[in-house]
Length: 360
Ligand code: SF4
Ligand code: SF4
Image 1: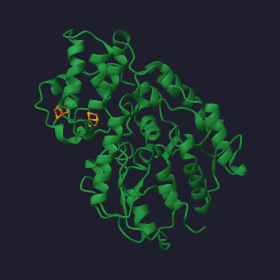
Image 2: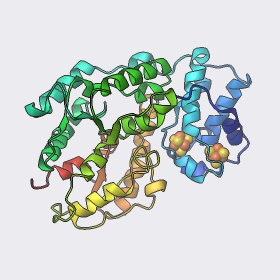
Image 3: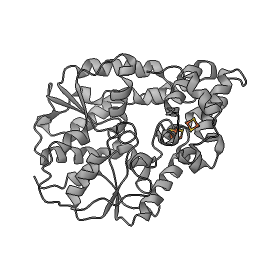
Image 4: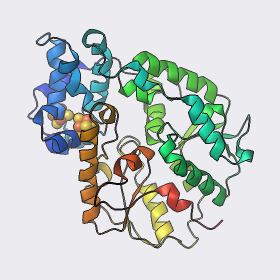
């Protein structure tokens, strides 16, 4: 995992006329060019060049990034701004202090396991299983218990017989502490998880954050991917008989989660699933696929600037409303938490809630 920013990349941004300015949801929602991708890189450059004192304040702009990768779409130099900013949060934390304390990285695995165990059918709660389900910490939050129920109903209705849950299902992949600047915690979590995951022939991630972190960041830490680490969407997609008739009679639009979309390139499969389920193509938003807007849920923004995260979610909801769709479909529990219940917004449904309605 990258622990120090890349000088070449930072300097490319510092001397750039901010070509990607229009793509940054943080800059757009805050109306603050001081939070543009270029300005965030500049804030890191100024600390590293000893032009300003390292402090929580001077390092704060580096925490206002969603890891959405939207800026890279307009960058002629293919700079990965979020990876540099995440590395800067790690590198400079010792001098500047931590904006987000280590305690914020810890989540209650026992409570999460109790919730998961309570929702899983008894035959899926086994000591050993062929495919381990890892819902991710967002889906394991209390407010998303109904999503867990929809997930298990979907697995049952699609005839799955191999997915199970064990205590290993609630392990942290390392993404959350990494995004918050706690590198040691992230590596420890990643190493522990990988060791435990060795027991299963396949691991299925429901969370886009976990899936992209494991596939893209673990190898950077020397953790080779010697197992099948699948996203839940890919896993379910292989179990759907696309020749069957659809069953969901609503006009929907689909939001690409950044970590399924720009990070992993998983654009077409959710659209194919929705086309099958609704007998119709999802209506597309103006900014879609590679250009889609973030929901505001990318770490660490919800922790350091929750109001800004809500403003970013509201901007995405306006895009969804403009399509004339009846529902906004998402594929990430974090997106749902940000988008659900926005005043005047569309009903928000996780794709699992739709799939859970298919006839067995
Ligand atoms: S990411 Fe690319 S376009 Fe954006 S400021 Fe940096 S160099 Fe410029
Ligand atoms: S990754 Fe997203 S939030 Fe971060 S600088 Fe780029 S566009 Fe802005």
